[in-house]
Length: 169
Image 1 (cartoon, rainbow, N blue to C red):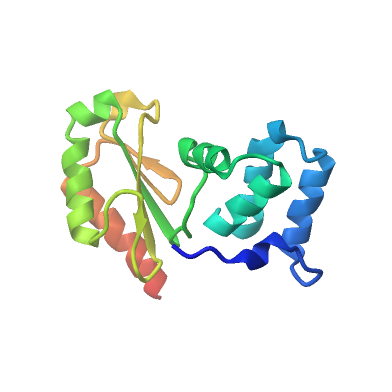
Image 2: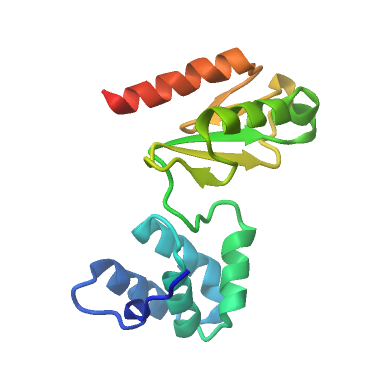
C-alpha cells in the first residue's frame, strides 16, 4: 500500500478536504472528536482511505494506529469504496443456527468475493453483521438496506440476480 502525502496539505481546490478541516476546527482539533471527524470524512469521501486516516491522525495529534483502530473497530466505517449494491448476511446465533454460514459461503462462491470485499466491477459489496436483532425471521440477509428474513439459497439467488440485473439496465 502506498501512502500519498498530498492529502496532508489541504488545498483550496479540494472542497471536501476543506469541509473536513472545518469540522475538525469546529471540534477544536480535540482527539476526543475522532469518531465525529471519521463520520464526517466518510460522509464527504465515501470511505476512509489510508491517506485520509493519516491526515486525520496528524490534525488531531493522534497516533495513526489509534485512528486506524477506531476506523476498523466500528462496522459503519469503510476503508474501501462500497459497491453500488450491498448484501449483508447476519451471522448472529439464531441466523447461524439456521444456516447463515452456508448462505454466506454460497454468496462468496457465486460472487467470487469474500465477506468484506467488493466485486471488481464495483457492483456488489458483501458483508456480515454480528446480529441484526431480527432473530424470529432467521436467517436474515439485507439487500440494499432492505431486510429479508427466512432466506434460502434460492431466495438469495433470486434477490442477487434482481439487484445485479437492475444495475445493467
